[in-house]
Image (cartoon, rainbow, N blue to C red):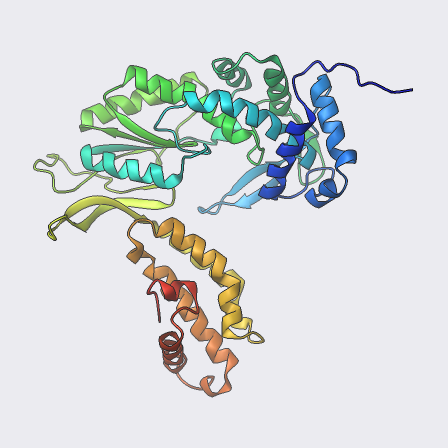
Length: 419
């Protein structure tokens, strides 16, 4: 007897699930509450992926609790991440791929976060252009955005992009999925969407597109802005306009059950070679956006002349974070390795830092790579006995000679950051 599968109620096929899992596998990531890893699912797809499709297509899919993990933030506080199971991440990827095709083409041109063919560098470039064109900027910081999203308003915003019942069905279940704490206790979720979920960035974009992007384009068309997820910079022509816009945005966010962080949302003066400057003392003349600090700097013009501009470069916080990463690697203790081995260990990290932060004002990276060269000099002292009782300068000088002989040994040496 040939068994036939019953007709499914939801428009989801097996191919979508398999393609979704390939993307989840490429993103890697930890296991969820069931402790099933990506490699286990990859080895036995019929056991783990077939039930995902079967339940998604029949409408009987319910997510498991989300495992809560805390990671340190730059300011010393802890950020809570929610890690769904691999099966749940695959299911989220299926709906995300479908929803993204419907929503992305309707997003604002000034929204850059977690979108195909959009990048942080594009947001930085537009922000730089707007800072040179307009005198004032509002640096917005939303308080615990992912944890404070109201579920009813989220579903209402989703309704502006799609009426597909299966998308609303599963998004509702993911929003209400319970949370498993460190001690193993499970708690219900009444608001917010877990950071770490595959579909969470897209839901955040949909929510802020309705709450902020479309609203400010309609009610305040005279201002410009850039938004990368929940990081927002608004540009205004004068100080009074900035005050009015900030108060209006605060009222709008309160209406949508969001809050702006006090003391971290400031009106910044984009000081440069303007003909007129404000007649009062300005409190803020810098702001940080996506790991870059915007502030007045001397820039070279097209004809070789220098003038004061308002431009970005790697922020001090990003420099400290990179230095902490290098310190925790304990390179100076790896005396059992050769210098080329050290170069191979840090190559990918250094290349990533240069490709991201070196896009604008690469010279500001000298502080980071000077620290790295000092760590390498410490490795030289520990590696070779003849340098241990001498001043550190002799080890550093040996490293300088090595850099002259082998300038391509380390990635940062290739870009001129030699000892």
